[in-house]
Length: 248
Length: 284
Image 1: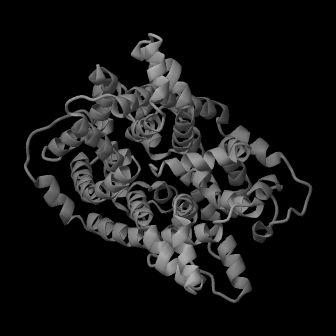
Image 2: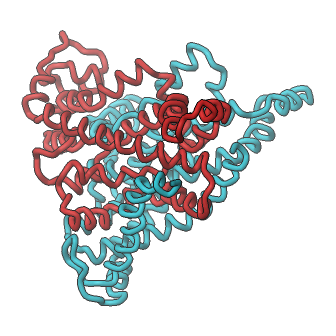
Image 3: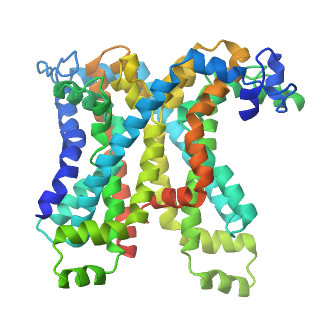
């Protein structure tokens, strides 16, 4: 893919299969790819979508995870099952009714509307519950003796200790939403709100035969590069985060 | 106070999961034509139309084939990679990273690349197969092959992901069972088949559930590569829903198909909640 994206365009179709570049790498393909698409705008949109989703998620899942991990209250088990069940009722299946809801709320064709269904992440809640439960209670006891309120305990003691869980959740959430295609395709119609994956597909479907192979490879690389670089830099962290999606 | 902490997450869960489930069940019995409309009650008409639709029945069959076709090989491969790369070291962690990489890639990006791999005659697949004397194949254009071409892409993309769960499972296995088998003279194969696989039972169950859910919810490659064709050979349930809603604007069939798909997932979830519950109890 990397090699294909760096080769000039007029190589014979069969050359596609030869994985060694036969001429000096040409950055032309990237020029074309950049010129043909509004990659800058799509990138800004996807960053807004991914970060806007994540920031709210971190708040909601920390609070709910803490409640399930540390507090006792009537109906706890039933509520917990309501959360658990959502893990199976995967959001993509609900695209049609969720779109109906967005229209009713006046959020159709907005980035906010794209984020909102993910703000109450059952997976994140579950992950944070497990993370909080693994933290020894001694820390809270000590803080309580020193006169800290529950809010201080949560924000100053527990959340810093739960950082590994929050980071794991963040990585999985960012990867998932960065790569998402179907939901943005349903929600967004205004070109100004499009994201990278949609741009890439428009690009790929507009391509004509094998001669555009280099162009598509270049476009793909633009979409994949940010996550790939982060992955190479923090490989172990990424892998561990995805293992924790197995709800250890 | 505990309820106040749960409220933010719960509101979004209710508004975007449980309320939609209720709403879609209601709308599927009405003649609503636009998003946001409720429409008038028409009973089971939409469901009658849905099951009379050959494309929908085709999508059910395709999705079943696709599920079996992707779940079995991707789990087998994931497990195989895990037992091969079990020991940690520089080489194995490099291999793990390579195998995991497809998971990080958007499915649409993988699809865009696979379109070119699957081009008849000049694509990578045919190019290399021709070298060993295999005739050119119409990977995405032949109705009897196209679904299996998508299966190949899915297995390639997901096997490395499932590998991670097996690696985690292997890490948590007690060593003495395998040592005992070794002392009893069991060879490597016997140890995998009689000791490792049975002890990884919960992991297999869990990964199977994830893989089955993925077989229902991942359709980006259908949209990009085949649009359900040729001749509806690659039409999957969620793609059918997407098409009815987004292209044919037949909200009746789209909502009815959503309810059917949700029912299938609910059956699946009954099964998986039980496996998960076991895991929670073991480790919590």
